[in-house]
Image (cartoon, rainbow over all chains, first blue to last red; front, side, top):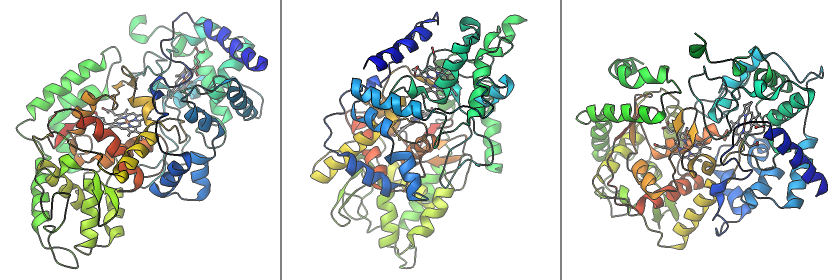
Length: 231
Length: 281
C-alpha cells in the first residue's frame, strides 16, 4: 500500500508540472458505473468471444482477450481497483517494462513524429488487416492534441501540446515519459491509455524512445508555435 | 473504383474537401453541419436506393440449389412478411433456438431454404467489407430491402424470454468489456458525452436519443466506400480498431452487441429511415 501510494504520488507530482487542468481522465472509465448488475459471468463472455471470432490460433485469443491480468481487474472493478488490486497491476505492469537495447530512452524525434501520427498496425481479420511487415503507428492523435499543425486531435487524453517546453528534458522527465508511453498502466492502473510496449501491443522499445523525443525535444513541432501562427 | 470516382466528384466540395484538410480549429460541429447540408442535398437521390430495388428482386426470385424464393423465410412475423420485420429484430427464433439479427436470419434462410453454401456466402461477404470496397453483396441488398420495409416505424424490440434477456446482458457485458491490443471497450468511446476521437465526435450509444438517431439510419449508404453498410459492418469496424479479429455474422457477440444498442433505440419514437447516408462510418 505504502509502495503503491508512493508511485501514485510520484506520478501526481510529475503530472502537476502541467499547467493545464485535466478534466475527466480518471484512471477508470466513468461510464462503467452500473455494469455490476449483469447476470453474465466472465466464463460465459469468454466462451461467446471465443466462438464469435475466427481466431487464427488459441494463443491469439489468449493474448487479445483471455489472459490479461490487468484488464481482468479493471473490468471486474469498473476501473476502480482497490489498494491490493492496484498493487497487483502496478507490480505486474512494471515487471513488463522494457528499454531499448542501447539503453537510450530518448530517440529520434522525427521518427517519433511518424509513429505518433500513424494509425497502421495490429488489425487482424479478413478485411483491412494491417501488413505486419510495415512498422506500426500509435495513433496518439486519436486521444491527444499534440503538434497543432496536425489536422486532427482527440480529447480522450490531456493535451500534450508544448509538452517538452513546459516540462523540460530532465532525466526523470525522460524516464517518466518513456515509461508512460511504453506502459501507461504501470503508472495508472486502469488508464484509458493503451499499453503500447511489450508482447501483444503495437510499439517496439525503440519506437517508444523516438516518441519520447518527439514529445520532449525543443526542436520538435510539439514545442514550437504552430506554423500558421509563426508566419 | 470507377463508381467511387463519380461519387468523389459529386461529394468533393462538401464532404471530401473537408476530410482531406480538416483543420482542427474548425470544430467537428462545423463538419457535422456541412455534412447535414450535403445529406439534405441528397435527400431526393440516395444511391442506396439501388440496393433496396435489387434486394426486393432478389427476395422474390427463385434462387439457390433448391430454386426457391425467400417468400417462406420467417423474419418473426410469419413466412415472407417483411413489413415491420426489421423494427422487431433481433429476436428469438424457435426453429434455430437462437436470437438472430435480420442479417443473420436472412443468411440462415439462404442456407436452409435456398440451399446455398454458408461459407460461399460469408467468405466473399467479409472480404467485401474492406474500406472503399464498392462490391455489391446479395446479403446486404436483401438486408437493405427488408429494413426499408420498416421505414416510418420506430424500433420496438422487446426482451420477452430468457434467451433474449441473456443476449441483451451479454451485449451489455461485451460493450463494457475492455479487450484487444488497445485495452479498449466500446464504452471507452461510446458511453461518455463530449468525446472527440481524431477530430470525430463520438456518439453516446447508451443515450437513447443518440442510439435512436444512429440505429434508424442503418443500413446506410457510406460515401467513402460507395457501398451500403449494415449494422454488422458498423460494429465490426470498431472491433477491428480495437484489434480484435473479424466478427462472424450472426455470432453470439454480433447479435448481443446489436441487441444492446437497439434496445436503447427502442426507447425512442425515432422512425426507421433507411438507407441512411454516412460520410465514412
